[in-house]
Length: 160
Image (cartoon, rainbow, N blue to C red; front, side, top):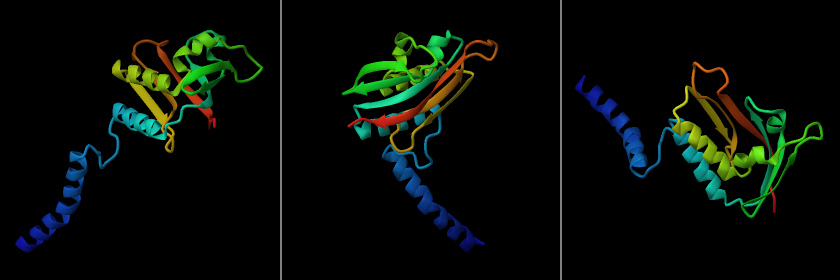
């Protein structure tokens, strides 16, 4: 029996040692474990990419006027927003309504703020390759029916 225990301990020591070594280096061997961890990992990946010119379509979901929820096409060049226009001709958009969502960095900031408010429900998705947010949804309070919101990002493309 004693020999079996030693073998079992030896078999566990290598993966455990590797996990501890990775953790000591600041790497989580089991992947992100919270929305804040997922956000940090995605933001780090985005920053590693060094992308400063891009465009994407953003669609907000909220208890808002139609002009604030219509899909908008955002274009960023050298880190600065150059345009926010209607993604389709079906509806007008108010570019001002998308001011907090008109760069990837601002999308990260909105998600970070939502997480910091300790919402009742929260989920976010990030592009696996580039790290930018694909979307999020949040419900801040279980008791209130009109505090839910979120957004979806689509048609992302890097501009050379």
